[in-house]
Length: 195
Image (tube, rainbow, N blue to C red; front, side, top):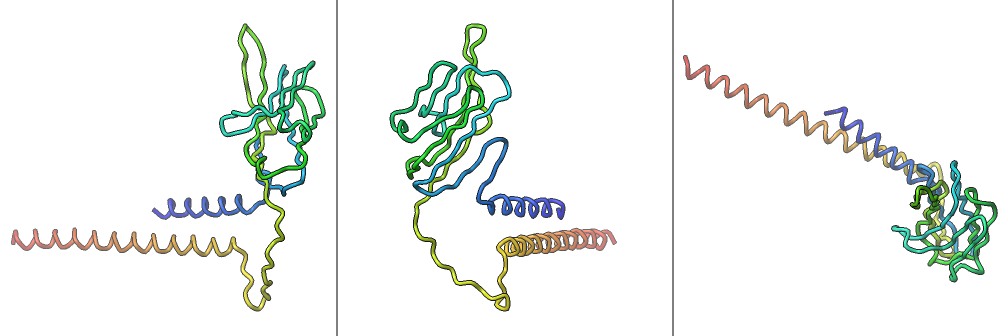
C-alpha cells in the first residue's frame, strides 16, 4: 500500500516539475508560449527521404498552412505575408511573423512519400503547440522578504502530497486494526461457544 502511495507522490512531483517549465518538449513536439506580434520558427525535420512537406494546423490536421516539394511551394492565403521558409524537403525552417491570438493551436510537420502507387504520410520532428498570449503589462506581485517565508511552489506541492500520503497511511492502518479486531472477536466468540 505504501509503495502505491510513494508512486503517486513521485508522479505528483514529476507533473509539477513538468508544468513549471515555460517551454516543455516531449517526443519531438514542443509547447511554445509567445506574445502577440512576435515571431516563431518551426523547424520541420525528418531523417528519411521525403518528397513533400505540409505544415498543417488543428487537432486533426484540418487546415493546410504551407506545402513544399522540390519544385513548388504554396502558402495559405491567411499567411501569405507572414510566412517565410528556408531549406529543402525534408529539413525546412518555417518562420511565422506578426503572430495573433488566432494563430494559437497545434502545428504539424507532415511528410508525404509516394511509393507502390500509394501515398504514405508521416509526422516529422518539429511539430509544435503554439500558444500566443496577449501583450498585457504583467501584474505587479509584491515580493516577500525571506523573513516572511518566501516558499517555492514545488515545496508547497511536496508538503501537500506528503500530507495526503500520511492521511492515506493512517486510514489504512485504522482499517487493518478494525478488521483484525473483528476477526479476533469472532474467533473468541466461537471458542466461548464451543466450551
